[in-house]
Image (cartoon, rainbow, N blue to C red):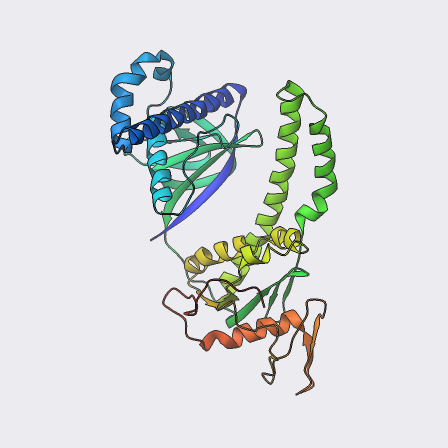
Length: 374
């Protein structure tokens, strides 16, 4: 069994939106209260944890605030659990030290059904304490907990559930995938997926909305409306990019037995200020993230070649290696005389590199630190 996550927009009335905002505010209040107490305890030499925070809050703090009785008690329990996870990541060096949450930024809360499963069937769903909510698309899932979050003025439901991966018929045994800026992806089979560049297309609209925002009185009613407009435009750009990557990764994972990609140093590539905006607009990291779990869903093997592998510099026909500046879009080999598109040449080299030594996780055994793309 594998885990699958879904996130969908909720169709709420004003009363339900108010209830969601109250729960999100409750979660934020408890998180900030716990963080303040956690920091104070550390200064005094104690070692707090989520269980101790919950005991102190339940026995001493919660009785002082009668309004908390009208909201789900699961909210503060998960707020302390999330705080504990944040500190755990901080101590492991995986994240920054937890900071206080701000109203209107990443508003969310989590609830469960006291250990019982939550059934999501169709368009209408009965959630613990919240009641009946509607979604814009049908959902069929059984989950243990649900997280509700707000983005650009709209509320979203997200959850994870178990499902059985299915093997799909493969049209090609091995395929190399080369990511680029001019084209989003080029497959070794000759298929080309064009770049959509959603941010580039939305730049003028974003600039106009941000100019309008800059002229509003900060924290006024019109200022908040302008903030939501800017956020909705950014969300639209992100959704267009994610949809294109979803379609591409699903097609690649469903129809190919083995997929070979390059271990791109995305953070290093973004250091190139001339290309950083275009690279970020493509979503290279998101492509790899989606491909990793979709290969598990559809019984496909993912092979990641070392980032120092000269896929663009090597002739896919004879193996000759030569320098290939980014402005040269065709690989002309002086040895064998072949003339081929540089992205197609790179994808064929990646396909041919499937025999390289890789570890059990599908990653190259070479050092993954440093380096730049091709």
